[in-house]
Length: 259
Image (cartoon, rainbow, N blue to C red; front, side, top):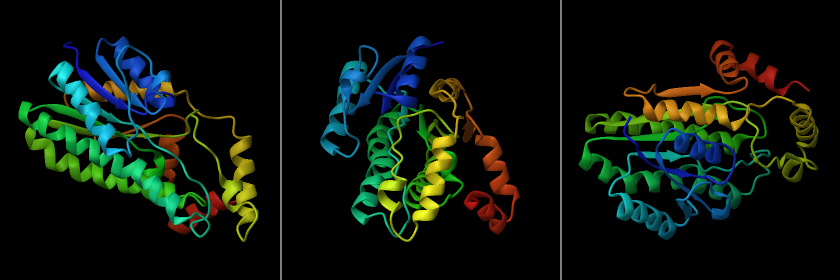
């Protein structure tokens, strides 16, 4: 297998770090980009905030200057935001979209011309089961991931003719550093009872897959000649997506809001 030049965002922890290690072990050349650059594994660490256009452009230019191509882009960087739609400030919601959607779009737009010129490439966007389902007090986060899935679907349809593969990873419950701010945002107002119940449920959960299982799925998508458009992976991913597709909306609502 020929080594591929891979650029991964959010590579300092969780799924991104595990993916950088997995692809490097498989023999690929990995550039890991993150704000906490000192935590990125391997010898090709790039300081990059996906919401900073200058840093994103500099990172892409660095990889192209050193390797003359980018074979794989893994858009993994993302943040969470939990609280009632009414309670979350629009400034925080906009920042969420800047990271989870517009950061992905900017980096993808920079890489695509080089992939088109070579007639090959692979783009892997890390979404979540939150990109298909919706849970209370996660409306803004779910909205960002729903938008990412729509963008990914359209992108896949647009670039297939140029020999570029686009795949979507849908992790379920994963042990990561995602911040749970339900109580901070909605723990004292009109939604406090629901917020407290949801927070207790999250704290009581002992589930969650290791990020390595997602990294393995990403590697398989990267190395596949015809990757599947969607890859649900990790604890409860397939089960929750199946229930969401099977149950009527009201029945699913009762299931996820049960206290």
